Image 1 (cartoon, rainbow, N blue to C red):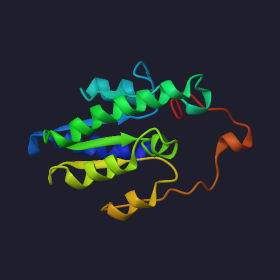
Image 2 (tube, helix red, strand yellow):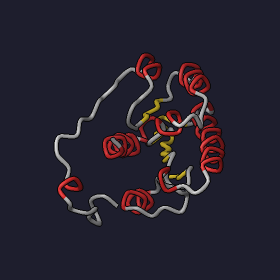
Image 3 (cartoon, rainbow, N blue to C red):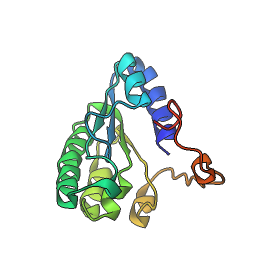
Image 4 (tube, rainbow, N blue to C red):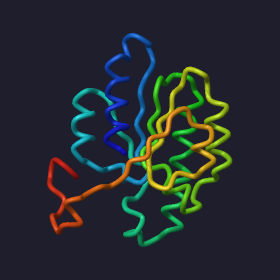
Length: 161
């Protein structure tokens, strides 16, 4: 899911000179200090990835704080969507703060419906609320067929970091 969104962002970023607008990637669950492979690669290209959360929700020691970070992060993302200076805004893993009730779905829906017509938004995450699917232009459902982790193989640096 994230990898597909990053590919879209990379494609849009590569054409940035044509449409004259920026690309922004927000990772709704990652910490701002995250330094995964995608962060390092995008930074070398001049496209920053901004973490808005405090990491994996199941490891959070303070869910109220996690929710507050999600709400503050959403305000940043919402401003980027509405300001009209971006061609593409990626909201990676936004479905989780929605599912956990940390973000008001109505505000997200309203923002997406009222955004400037030439601002594209890509959302990722599992269990997307049906209301988002209803207003989306394109929806892709990714289905896990087989995963190394389920076979006891831990995450591999460079593949899942």
